[in-house]
Amino acid sequence: MAMYAAALIPLLGLLGGGIDMSRIYLAKTRLQQACDAGALAGRKQMAGGLWSANNGEANTVAANMFNANFQSGAYGTTGLTKSYSESNGMVTGIASVQVPMAVMQLFGQSIKTINVTCEAEMKIPNTDVMFVLDVTGSMSSTNYGDSDTKINGLKMAVRCFFETLAQIDTVANCGSTPSGSPPNAQLRFGFVPYSTNVNVGKLLNNQWMADNWTYQSRQANMYVPSAPSVGTTSQETSYSFSKRSKCENWASGSTTNGLPTSNSAPPSFTMTTYSYSFVSWNSGTCVRQVTPSTTIYTKDDNGSFFLNWTYKPVTFNVSGLKAGGSNWNSSVTLPVGSNGANTAITWNGCIEERQTVSAASYSPIPNGANDLNIDMTPSAGDSTTQWGPALSGAVWGRYDNNGNTLNEVTTTSSLSHNIGTYCPAAARRLQIYTGSTDFDTYVSTLTPTGNTYHDIGLIWGARLLSPTGLFASENAFTPSGGDIQRHMIFMTDGDACTGVENYTAYGANWWDRRTTGSSPAPTDGCTETGTLTQQVNARTEALCNAIRNQNITLWVISFGDGVSGTAQTRLQNCASPGRFYTASNTAALIDNFRSIAEEIAELRLIS
Image (cartoon, rainbow, N blue to C red):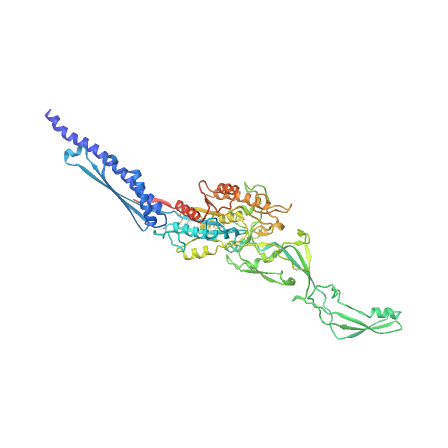
């Protein structure tokens, strides 16, 4: 009994210590979890802004999250304290609680104090972000309740996105100033503003653009006469006239060596006219005087006379735009100027798409629709795989007294171009921005223009982002071989809206009919019934599927109150699951962009 009594005391100590240690472990584990949860919640609430913003809302969120995970008095604890602070984007939490001892009090240990710390920072993996932005004419309007235009709201939203993700301040007032450090991972941004077309041509290699391209244009018809012999007045004799009246008839009048007479010839010709006058007649011999006249028309430098124009499809050599590698000239000389003269045609960078086919559905993408192939690299000399420069100055939509026509039109008149041409701001390939100046400057160039062709924006956004296509050498991995996460931000303020006389990436729509087929004439509009609009919608659907299949996260934002219910559904179906947003005004748009940036960023506990 004495031995048993002696052993009981250490046995109670071991048993009591186990009970109390279990309570200590449980309390510390839950306290640590609560501290971690609060740090994460506070850092997420802070996003790219300040810890003190909105009356310290981030700190409030952190404390509330802590309380939701560890309530005062839990597990019999007392004296709970907690606090959170932030420095250079790092949120640090400290928590302390006292655990009263049960059995261990018998051994002089009445209370055990537990202290925990936690930290959270926002980090992102290597990330590429491609903005595919609707900059059509409707973006110059104002949403209900907004005081500024939609395009200015978009510019602010894009800048706030950049601030949140890159932790770099811009000229926009996003509510707070980024207080974190720029990410140490590779972070690149690219842009494809789109409307009726996209301005991507000068991002391409020379070999990807065809040397010859066919346009709905005009061809000068010229006449090259034999050189007239011009000299002094002379006399000619004929012996073939038996009557004086026949002699006088032969010896009078004028000739222009087979060219049209002055009454019917087009203006501005130069040629020598010969006048004949009767001199005498005697016994069948007739004498006339020949006098060369002054010039009455204008001759070109090649000695040819301009007769008229034939308006029709014409193939031109456009290789003069190529300056080697990825360098481009800004104009090419073509014979479409006044009276067929060579003239410089400006190229601003918009393109005509490569070979396509007309189909009712593009899911799956049909053979021959090279334009919808994201990754196809052009083959030198194969124009079906190459692109052509969009040259609005060399394009005419033919018409006659009955309106637009597919027939050739020959006339001395210089017809109106009869097309609507819109080329948005130049696109940008993916690049790293170490500061905000270049980013801000570029965003400032976004200007509303033209109609809405979603498909052309999506296909070029995908081409510039794809890791296996045109720019695979710089997109597949980081320079050090790291993996890259890819995101496309596709924003639009409305339904597809087309025009038969728009000069687009598929030519002059009414005349070229590359997407609608040869007959009947395409119809347009901002409704679902226009054949051009139906084509844009069908191609958009196919491209959305193709982009998601490239392991690209496709975020879609519908902006403003002008988007129809049908278009809303189409846009939602376009987005990756759970990645569709709507914004009725600028404030909501900024929130959408900021939320996307926060989701792209990955919150990680570091201790």
